[in-house]
Length: 176
Ligand code: IMP
Ligand code: MG
Image (cartoon, rainbow, N blue to C red; front, top):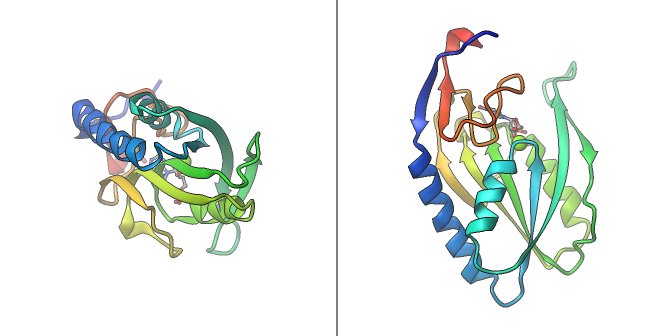
């Protein structure tokens, strides 16, 4: 198996501390009405787990999944491969994502979820690469803004590897 050079961008302690801050904020914001956390598979699994376990209010958890692929046009296509298991009508929804890159995935998934008439819908992403955006999408809460590097760890993968790294690492440009 090829070994990649991985540079640490954000330490495990820093990631965990930021997630605890976000969890505290959501716990107080939704303490009266509760919330449904919707994780976007597969990348959100570690962030969603840590966020949910640091929250001090009961939350429901559901998932959606999508794959994106480059078509012949430059807009790309996003295909939903797993829909929500339960209704979110009238519920307060917090969409949980690993990273916003072009913004295409969340832009589509949020439109689909808003059409189901939730009471409210907010997006939290662990990482944001604002320099890569191709569609007008902005998360409501961001863990960290990062430069245009390909990152792994905390659920994010390179060819399905490195999702389990406990810190955020960046791959060498020449390995990509
Ligand atoms: P989008 O371009 O904003 O639609 O991002 C689609 C998905 O690509 C993200 O949710 C991630 O799962 C994945 N992705 C984007 N940038 C990276 C990266 O640097 N490392 C790993 N996965 C990424
Ligand atoms: Mg993702």
